[in-house]
Length: 137
Image (cartoon, rainbow, N blue to C red; front, side, top):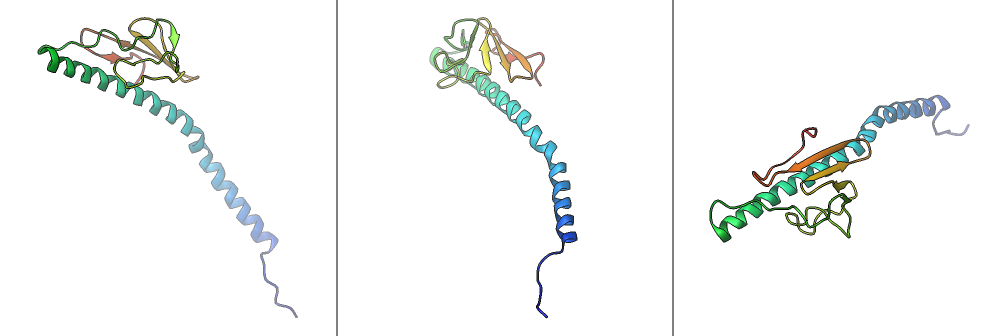
């Protein structure tokens, strides 16, 4: 009699069933990754813009003395345009600006972030240097 080695059909079915259960339980985490990456992208740009505004004011303090002024504009982009390589937004406060098509400018101080499922509007105030959104966390 020969020595037979291998798996039985029952063992193979059990392993495949267990792998299927693990895959189904992990699926929601993979779906949520896209949403989290869009939020992280938005938060990164907002943080960079806020830091750029603060640095611009600090540079003005060094150059011109107190009280230091905030930048008059965040970029040289015309109103009502989508941020692109040809017209990057936030070029005054972020090196090379932002050319992400998710951002657009509606007027001199208002920017919109649209990730396809959510839209957030940010407003820049030249009085106190804030870059805020009433709807974004």
